Image (tube, chains in turn blue, red):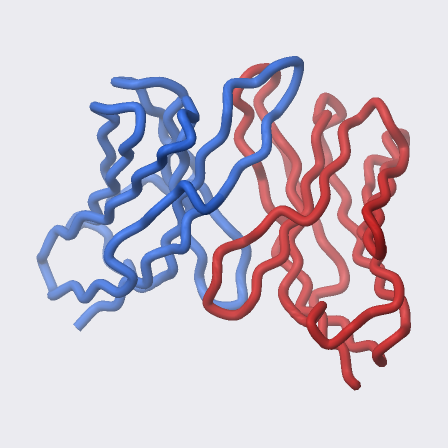
Length: 115
Length: 114
């Protein structure tokens, strides 16, 4: 999982502002994922992408948007429509499935705080 | 869809004791069950996983058992050490074949006291 990077480590958002979180991987993985983690809770899936130029909503997609223009990059935008964005955001990636689910490897995360 | 429940939410043990964390899942088609360890402020890291064609898998002090009939799987840590203190998450896939979404349990906070 050392091949997945996220930036910035900390991000501050003002009211009404859109912010973009970066996720890059050099593992040649096809699939990439975005999760949100709130304090003391598990991980909830925001969006995922199985292939370039394609992505699907997860369980909590409202107020978020993504793009997948390159295999190695999967940026997440937190829009002003997301009213409670304070959380720890984790990006993950995995190889194509070969007879079953493949392991997801996580990036170091971005902590988003609202000013 | 899949629902994953994890117990207990907190677990406190003495160094050298064993720790067991249990997860139940609802989707009988699920075939892959990973366990992640997350230290404070860090990323979740895979510590062990099991596929549905086996009932148990071991890696040194860590083992995972799977009961497909009862739809539960458990993480066993033996000879616990203070560095085992962390939050542990189980997960199970949902959605059929291909790239399944992983549904995570709520986590177990393990504290190992010297």
